[in-house]
Length: 316
Image (cartoon, rainbow, N blue to C red):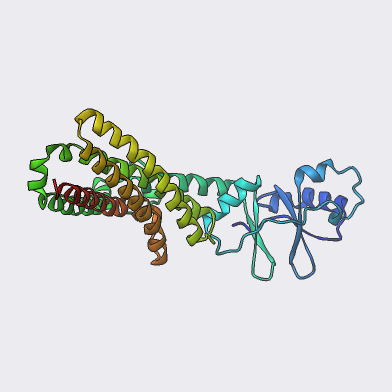
């Protein structure tokens, strides 16, 4: 935020404003908009430089052409929200006001672009599961190897632990898999499909949380489960058909259908709920959801797959 912005009184004429801008231009940090306040310094409207220049009758009071439907932020507004408001409303700067509506300054376009660039880089690293709040050290190729290892290693360790748990789970069903080897060949398909559906859900819920701070969780979760059910039905049926055509085994096709149907629903539910829980405990959902949700999703998928298999094959 900068405080050196053009501020004038509501009753000042356009001519007075132009003269003031010419005389005081060197004192302003940004001149994209002129801000108008009342005697209590409460922001009432803005005029862009373009509209000021285009106005033909310079004797008009500024209040005649100023925009009163304002987009503002307060000093505690999240910087991602500032960028979103600026881009979605086509603004070059956003005024900052306090609880009483008094003008404190403005966030200029260069600051908005810097924030946008920083957040894009941060999101790229977060999607990679880097265990760190991305800052200036990741905007350069000169970060030390020790720092990079320390930032990335924790999530890989968690992944190893999760993979070991999954392997332990599979080991409990070695006899079943040995007797019906086709089941083992479809484990990668089951894990990939549930992870893919979960990754889509994760991206959508994190984006929704960022854009809508008052997200209706119950409504959103209900919609996601309905969508997941439809995706699971179609994907499960298609996978079951391929399993039957390639292995000529009806029981295998039924197992694949049921297991994939419930696995996708479980994965979507996990990847929807996980960011909400992380946010509740003040953790960054974009940073932690991917690695953690993937572990839980994989274990749930394997458990469902093997449980369905042992249930249907128990009587054969």
